Image 1 (cartoon, rainbow, N blue to C red):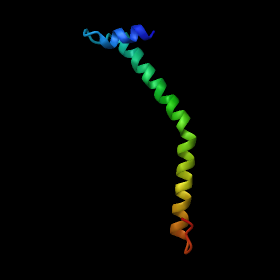
Image 2: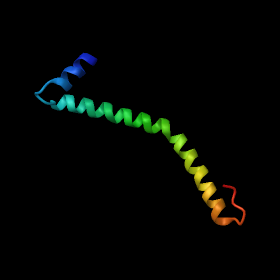
Image 3: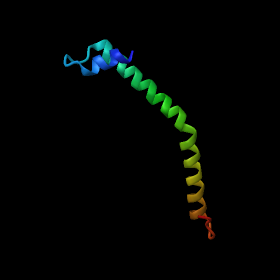
Image 4: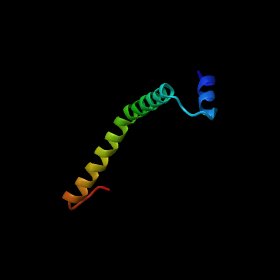
Length: 64
């Protein structure tokens, strides 16, 4: 598989439609997997930051 991908990227003829669709599908799958992996971390970070901002805005004794 790597040899075929290397040949496609090195060749000067450009991409054919099936090759472009395959590469786009792989890029979409990789993006989805990264997003799915990072979702809990970004949610926790947003909740932590939101809680700190809420505490700082609504309290006379913020705990930054």
